[in-house]
Image 1: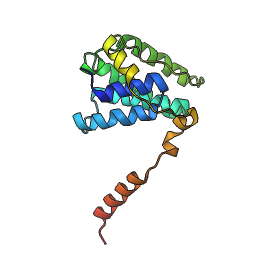
Image 2 (image 1 turned 90 degrees about the vertical axis):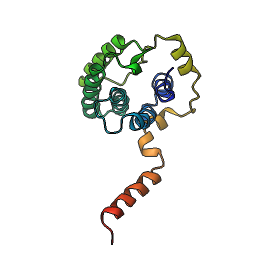
Image 3 (image 1 turned 135 degrees about the vertical axis):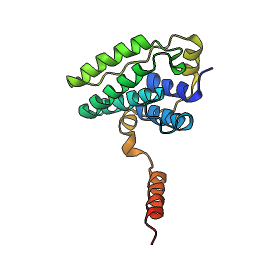
Image 4 (image 1 turned 180 degrees about the vertical axis):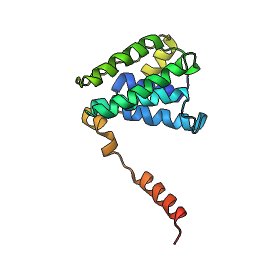
Length: 163
């Protein structure tokens, strides 16, 4: 019933607060189901994770910008099938509160997305997650291996500018 990528997103968000991985797993799914559709309902969740990642790292300006976008996107699609099993009213209220906290440059404080469907709760609880340190999760974008990204970028440049 629930997409595996969305279950993983919720697991990373609620359980180990690996917001970077939330972004990665849901972005891959978004690219499969709606490539290039910038107002797709998944975009709001991707932006929410990105905003939380920025806030945790003390990037208040970046967090404020992306959380405002997340709020707009999540409100655009009030009846999305992706929202089934989630208490969206509570999530939107939490998001409003977090936007205020970020604007006041309050210290990072995580929250869990309220899941109201027992089957979804069970799937989220059962998803296997790696055991990672808080430091690694906080600075994941700096610590991960980016060789594949660098290689793809070089190939695109070479294709644009052949010698």
